[in-house]
Structure formats: structure tokens, C-alpha cells
Image (cartoon, rainbow, N blue to C red; front, side, top):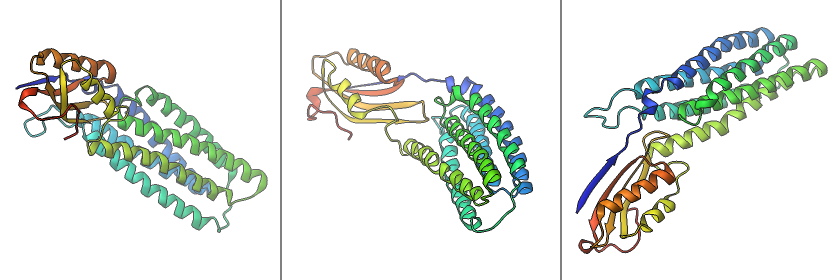
Length: 305
């Protein structure tokens, strides 16, 4: 029996400071306008503006968590945490998603309660602030766009800013409608709309984060396709204990036991499988244990356990 490991570590996430810098820029933009929007909401009596400001508060919290996650993720692995601290990014994303759910419920509660109240809303101020918010959110989206597929937290921040931009558009439309119709309840309707926008993206972020924490198969990788690549390799009799998971969004890991035919070359088989997994699935970290076929009773099939 041979036990071979191929550890091709990808440290690009650790050494690349670009996501962190872009998150800081987005944080500064978001927090600065958050205060403007909140004060503007109080002065104009617009619940839609206040709701959007609270939404931006959660965005700021998420951005802070994302920055902290990247900083901690750069810490080197040690004897206690042999994979390092990169998974803190995933925990931060999960916390962010949970906070988003609570904020969404609060916005909906306030909007439904206030929909029956009559408030004199200053539509001119509401419209001006919402237009400024639209440009601020669009700027943050441009900053984060190039890194959104490289980090789960950057992706979460990007989705939040994207929803904020839709919220700003909703507030603009609401201000115009109220101005020309006098229907004050539109403001609460817009607030409800902003609240409901939060749920799908919070669910998406939470689902992806939990999948990583639960060591699920990474998004974009199909278990049966990996199994087929291994079983189709010349000299492979079967495989078992095949596991695929990820430490972070872009660091997938695979381990497995490969049962090879008695006269086959295990090193040649292993290297060939690793090359195909890298080329087809970008699996850079694989650990394959090679077992001679004559010493096992495993069938010609690749099993999870």
C-alpha cells in the first residue's frame, strides 16, 4: 500500500490585498452615506429612507466582518489550526446573513405598523437623498465587482450593495409617486419592498456558507463527475472513502482511497488522476491513498464511505 499526498496550496487569497482594499473603500462609501440617509429619513419623515439606512447599517457590519475575515485569514497555519484561519471568512458571512434576516423582519414590522399612520413626507428631500444614494451604491458596486467571485464575503457585500441600489431606485420612484399623487402610504410600501429584497440574498449567502461549514461538495463541482474521472482511469479497479469539501469558497479539497489493479503503477495512476482533476475541476489540493486490488474486497465502484 502506498499513501501519497499532493499538497498544491493556493496562497493567492492570502497575499492578494486587493479584496481588502476594495472592501475598505466600499465601507467608507456605505457608512458615510448611511448617516446622511438616516438623518434625511428623520427630517423628511420617510420610513423608506430610514429602512434603507438601516439596511446600509447591516451592509457596513457585513463589510467590517469581511475585512476582519481577510485579515485573520492571512494568519499562518499553526499546530492547532493546521488549515489556518481562512474559514473565519465563512463564519463572518453566516453571521452577516443571520443579521440580514433580523433586519428584514424589523423593517417589515415597522412598515406594516406605519402603513396605517398618516405622515407628512417631504418628497423633495427624500428624492434628492435617494438619488445621491443611487450613485453611492453604484460606485460601491463598481469597486467590488471584479472580486465578487473570488471571496464569499466580497460576494455577500456586492449583493448587499446591489440590493441597496435597487432600494434607492425604489425610494426615488416612491418619492415621485407621493409628490404627484399625495399617497403617503407609498412610503411604507417601498419600505416593505426593501425588506423583502433582503430575504433572497440573505438565504443565498447563508446557504452557501453553511454548505462550506458542513463540508458539503463545493458549488460547481458534481460528485458523480469526479467519481467517473477516477473510475475511468486505466488501472483503477475501484475507489472508496471519496470526500470533497472546501475550506473557503475557492479552496476545494478532495481525499479518497484508490484501489488499483495488481500490476498497475500506483504513482502513475495517482499523478494522472490529479492532473485531470486539476484541469477539469481546478482541484488543487488532493490526497489519494493507493491500495493494491489484491488486498481489498471492494467492488468496482467509487463509494462515499
